[in-house]
Length: 419
Image (tube, rainbow, N blue to C red):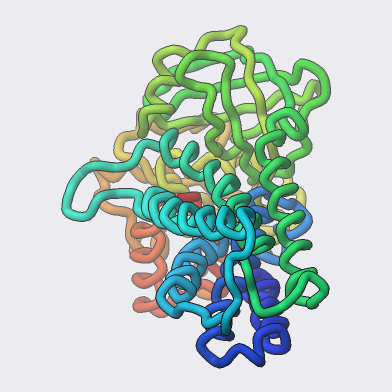
C-alpha cells in the first residue's frame, strides 16, 4: 500500500499526459509521460524528505519511508533517461523566445546534475574498494536535489510543448512544483521548526558505547518508547544531524533523554572524544514504530550490541501489560560491553514475566537458534521476535529457528540504514 501511495502522483501524471499529448504521436507521449512522471516522483520524494509523521503508520515507520524514498530516486533516474533517449516530436513547435531557450538549457543542466547527485546518493561505497562516501558529503549532495527540482520546474513550465497552460497536465505539474519547492524549503527550515534544544547533563564513555543524557532547555520532544531521534550538537564536527535510538528517559518528569551511541564512524568517534557536559544539543523526533508494547503475549527480544537501546526504552511499558512473557537476549562480544546490565538483571529478578540473558560471543560463540531454544523460558515457536541489530544476524537467526521448527509468528525490526 505504501509503495502504491508513493507512486500514485507519478501514475496520475502518466494518465493526464494521454489527452495532453495524444495528437503528437506515441513517441512524444512516451517521452513526456516519462518526464511528467519523473517530475511527480521528484515532488513526492521532496515531500517524503520532510519526514511527515502522519504517514508513518502507512509506511510502517520512517525507516520504510526512506526505503521507498530511495526506490523512487532510482525510478526518477530511469524515467529521465527515457525522456532523454526518446526525443519528443513537437511538430514544428520552435523555441520562440529567450525564456524558451533558457528552459531548454536548464533542462539539460538539470539532467546532468541529477545523474551526478543520483550517483552520490545511491552509491554508498565504490564497488571493489573500501572507500565509503562520508555521511556529511552525502547529506550535502542530497540537499542539492531541491535546486535540481527548481531547474526542472522552470524547464517544464516554459519549454515549448504540445499543450497549453490550461491543460490538466500543465495545471497538475504546476501544483507539483509548488508542493516540491515548499517541501524543500521546509526541510531547510526543519531544524528551526521541529528541533528542540537540550543541554547535555552527562557523558559516560563505557566500553559498549558513549552514554549521553540531556535535559530540555524549554519544551522537549514528544517520543514513545522504542523511537529514535535525530540529534546534533553545537560543537565543531558534530553539527550534522544523525539518527539514534532513545535509550530511555523520555517519560521522566523533567523530560530528560538518554542515548547510547557506539563509536563506529567519524561522527560517533568524534562525539566520544569531544562531547562535554554543558554542550548544547538539538533533538528532532521521535520517529519510528518499534514498540514492543503493542505486541503479543509471548515475545523474544534480541539485541545485537548497541541494539539494546530501544529495549531499554520500551521495557517498562511492555511489562505493564499483565500476563506478558518476554525474554531478552543481549548479544555482545564481551560482557564488559553490556549496557544497563544491572537494571536488566534487577528487572528479571523483580518481574515474573521478564527474563534476561547476556550472551558474550567471545566465550559462547555466535548466538544461534540453539541458544534461544534452550535458554528461553517458554517455547519460542509461534512467539513474536523483536530484533534490533545487524541484518545478517537477524536473517541467520530467523532462518535457524524456521529450520528447527520454532518459527516466530512475527518478526519486527527497523531498517536503520537511511542512505
